[in-house]
Amino acid sequence: MSNSVSVKVVAAEGMPIERTLKKFKRMCENYGITKEYRKRKHYSKPSILKKEKLENAQKRRIKLQKKSFGRYSKI
Image (cartoon, rainbow, N blue to C red; front, side, top):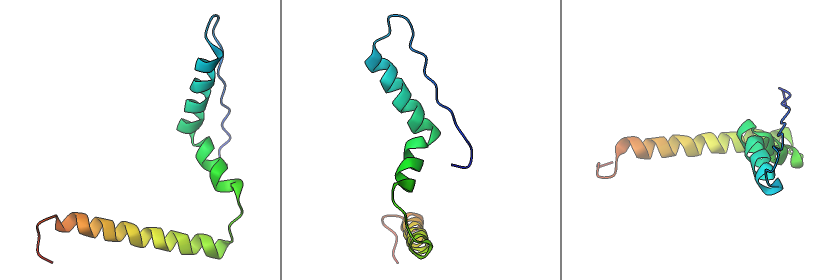
């Protein structure tokens, strides 16, 4: 992770631990920590990453193209 983020959740007096844990998980999700963890969980070769990036870009282009033509337009 390029920017170091420290997530802290202070448990208030009388606050259930389940609620505190839920708050912690939500904060991790908002800061992108869980996404980064899943990304780094397995090593992918640079060539595979490049291929996936190109495929995702192609999918985005096709999706935008379909969206711009509309549902009832003639292609």
